[in-house]
Image 1: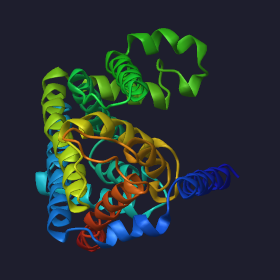
Image 2: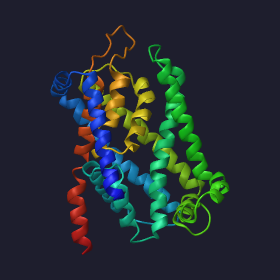
Image 3: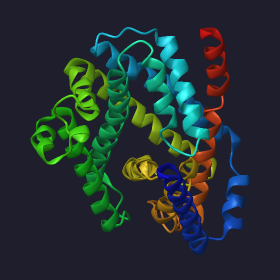
Length: 316
């Protein structure tokens, strides 16, 4: 029953997002923008996405080593591509994380595997928020004050929440208000997961944060390359501000992760004005750009399917 409700929620979010988009744009114009995309810039964006999977596998390696777990880097790369395949082609943004946890749990306790995957996600988000805060004072004059306030609020709340998780003391203090299985103290699943997160150690965590900084610059870069593929003059600094908001929307349940991010991209890009006297971006620009990134990210997940089959056959 619960899984059925979750599926219905994902469908509702995706359909609602598409309805909103269709009330704001001419779908034909957006499709025409996609069909005119420069394939050279699109290929550059695709290469950045695929390269980032290898980099993120190295980040995961650092976190596992912080717990004294030594797994071959090549295996972690294969698992990251496999997880990306499941994220790309299952109706959830977290299916691949479950696959990675299950595979690594063959070698380490399940809470350790889950803790490193959680930290892998968390360090990426934290550095994305840091980049947004650094870029905020240098935002273009045309950047709407309301959007600047949203970026500031999202980044600060995200950093505070991440710090509370990494430190753990605030969570443990609130533990008495939570039922046993959800308590961050004791022997429940949440408590074991929290201990695994905090056992990684600061040297490994600092290394993971540094890798996350490079990864997030790559993430903004593939949005920038996708914008160039569509002929959009979006500055890199503008993307540093808006990509964190677009990344957060992927946490919203949606079918294949499609709908929520495209709705936000429509708000952030359509009508935007950049320096140099360029005309405001046309309606449908945000949807076309987000859809192109969506397609490239799905395309980059294709190698994970054969890798998963090969790994499964090899293990048997």
